[in-house]
View (cartoon, rainbow, N blue to C red):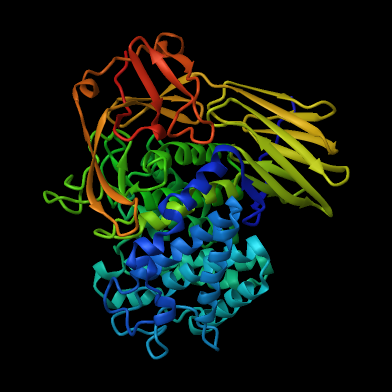
Length: 624
């Protein structure tokens, strides 16, 4: 049998893929009822505009912090407003970004430092590139969603100045050798400036952006080791004795830089080194899709291992980059697991709060619970909050980016031939062109709560093209129907070839048996398709702080009775589906499946719900 090749792909512009169904309802609810639409009113750190007001120096390690909070929120808010199609929020996002563009200096500078202190700080550069990237990425999102040329011009002018001030070899990252090792958080975040350079390179084809990216990565890798957040530095990736141990957020976000550097020039980061890094990433992955890290990567991937919401968002974006560059369908599996399990399970379904730190098995979600940065004192990271201002307002802004990033990368363009690839599944519609022909595809489904997907293809005129449909690794059988097509099956992708006409339809169905995924302690996660299932633990909801904006609270969740969580069932792996029956729940709201899950797994008296539908839970079990 002829096998479908691994597709070569590139991302579509933000706004080309839009949510439908539950995903659209969640985004709209997050904007109108949750903190996503009003985070600047809730948090003074998001409200503070360092891009406008500027600061004198980065000698204080945290001087740049509010630029991160505001910039990441502007990025997520802009994406969510346009993907959700809410005109009021689209207008407000445009006004906020207009103010950002008005803060740009005549020479193109768009950042947080006053003229006499930018690009050269006595205590070492500790936020310049990072803060600039937080300003430029929202503008890129605005340009992609609206076509506003002024936003594109602002990005290009800002990048031109920075590359002029940091030409190859002048030592942006070498400045880190002159400062305290613990004061490099902002500097090492600055490797994410490559996100801006990669976008500009793809949009313009200008080689200077690639040259600058390679120079920045070489500088980063040449810093005196060890330094904080050096997991993705080339010497560490080439050292087979090393393991990951940096701030998990940095490790997740730096993966994008490593992937692009390798794609530009494998001599700058050899294939074996990149492969070793991806292997280390998988070693620290949990069945929920999360990368463990409390806040640094340490310990084993056990059910109670903590992970940070910032890491979830950055990991999703890096996995999408990996999928585009390497085409491995298993990366799409990971993206779905992450978006549908860890990310949904670390937020409240109404969008009013997230947990800074979460875990697959979470029996307490309280401010008093210690973590590795606080022990034995209260850590304040496990509670639910719309801001987490008492720790750091980083996870809440990043939470606004999660679902928009997922939706935006559900489809990608094939680069070697006319066509599109469905990389991750869920209700959405894509509007793009295949050659000169405008094409709209509606993906009608309740996935991940359904095992069937209908693709309605609507080109403006007949067009010959290929559709590559990802074959999930957990699907034991994939069925596909589409009259008049040539289908080439592969282990990872289905290739559907046709001259597409308005009204064509492709139906995809999956067989999802129950499977048991192991944790490092030998316990097992119960999974079906992209969803992990957990035993919910009844919780008391306790108000611990009230925000000035009505309806927003900081909350603790304590177990009412831990007995059921410790009277563990022993799963019978010898029985079909481990003895579980798949049971539909009638009368649930399809617009809010995480609050009202439409099904559950039942084995005797045991009732498991999707992990993303639980607050307190046990997510791992022994088996015989």
